Length: 364
Image 1 (cartoon, rainbow, N blue to C red):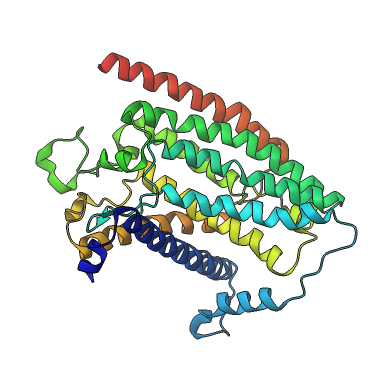
Image 2: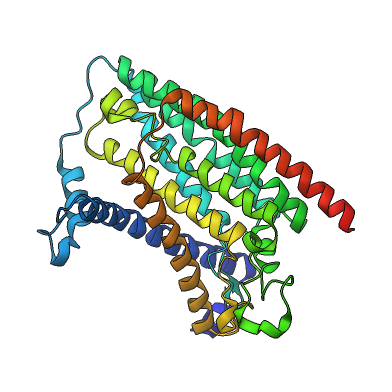
């Protein structure tokens, strides 16, 4: 098998391995998206003293498959009053950026000679922020295309919210780039191997890992700003103003049904996964786990798979956190949401940049 692959030309090998990585990432992403819905329903049920899905399969594990079949079989109805071109385009505009973000995430070190990243860009973070910012256009289009007041209000809310918190999110990672001196996500993970240097080496594995969130208070603050902005960017409580069922009856997706309706929710959960993957990559060491010596690029297939498992495990912890917060925190009022973004997070992020730059200058 390996001889057959080695006999292929380099462009053919590149296309083959890239296709396999794309297929693998897409399959795992869709699986996580489907079962994130199941986890969310189970967590909500546990918090509210209910059982949750328990009919389709053992413990309701086949509920995502049942939901998918239902979405496919439901009538794909297009209301007569909508703006049809934009109405059909909006779900795709929301879904595609959520998938494209995963292209630059290093979800493992390597298997054999293949790096476990689809596109190892030197400006991976800039690509991520550029792609993520496109998702809001789909929500605005959905609100405009519905030609109805509640969806339109949801779209307007979403555009204001995204603009407000994208600035804070972008500013929050600048101290990290100043600290590391890299925009390549794989290189950023490479700076997080081993244990922190500000504790004595005699403590050994008792020390925290050298993940950026533990390297300085400035980077810890960057993480918390990024985490809060990620909730806003994914329209999750306490920042779900574009949907706000009690006020807007669902907001921008009121007029949608069948698979177009499902695509909005698939995009939301895919964005949750992408945001979690970015937090793991930037602040929590990616696939590294120094306590077990798993912080160097893998030399075997088993080691490469272990690194992928470590990355996915960390990512799922953040997905669970985002789900848990939805059922524990109340929604902000709209004026509180804007106040938090413009008068709290943005000045704090700017101050963090200045303090980090001064600290690095004085330390140089």
